[in-house]
Image (cartoon, rainbow, N blue to C red; front, side, top):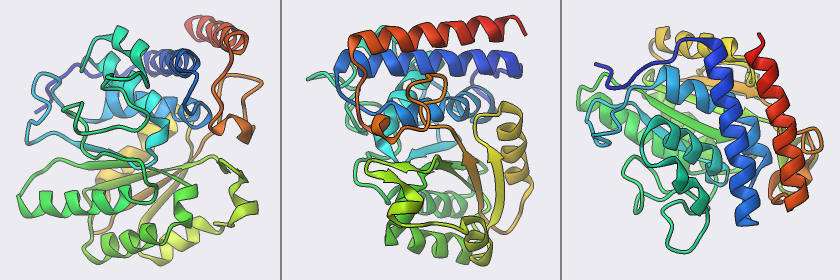
Length: 285
C-alpha cells in the first residue's frame, strides 16, 4: 500500500533535487549556521528516496507499514527538512526557521519536534546500529516495509559502525538498504588523508554484504541500485554513492571548507544564481 503520489519522471526528480539545493543554500545562509556541502551533494538521493522510492503517509506519520528512514549524519539535515517539507510533512515556509530558537528544524533532527523523524541524531557513527535494530524488529513483527539509512564515509572511522556491519550480516538483514555518502570530505579535510577507508567495497563484500557502487548524483543509477537492493535476499545492501560535495555551486564543489561553513549573503546570491541557471538547463531537456 502506497499512501502518497509517486514521481516517476527522471526530469521531475532532477528538478526536485534542484529545489532541495536552493532550499539548503537559503536555509543555511539565513541561519548563518549549518552544513551545506554534504547536503548539496545528497540532493538527488533525497529526491529519489522521498519522491520515488519510500512508502509513507504524511497524514499518518506513524503508519506501521511505512518505510523507515534513518539519517545517521544528521548535520546534513537541511536537505532532509527540504525533502520533508516538499513531500507535505509541514509548510514549506517553515524552512525559514531553520536553526532558530524554538523551531522544530534544529541543527540535528530530533524525534521530539517532528513526528516522522525515526532517530534523533547528532553524535556520528550511530545511525547504522539504529537501523539494524529497526530492521530486525520489523522482521520479527512480520513487517514488509524496508529501512533506508544514509551514512557518511567519515562515520566509517567510528568503531560502532563496523559493529553494526557485523550485526547486519549475521542476521541477514535484507530489508536494510544503506547509502554511504562517499564524498571524501570531513570537517578537517579529505577522508583518505585523515583516516583512509579504501578499499571500502572489498571490506563490505568481505563482511558478506551486497555492495553496489554508483554515481550518487545520477538519478537513474540511484533508482537502479535501490531496485537491486530490493531483489537481493539473505544479506543487507550497501550502496556506495560517490557524490560531489557542494554539487551545483562552482565555488563550493569538492572544497572541504564548505563542510561546516555557512555562505555569506553575497555568496548565497551567487549560489542561487548558479542553481537557477542549472534549473533552466534541466527544464530545457
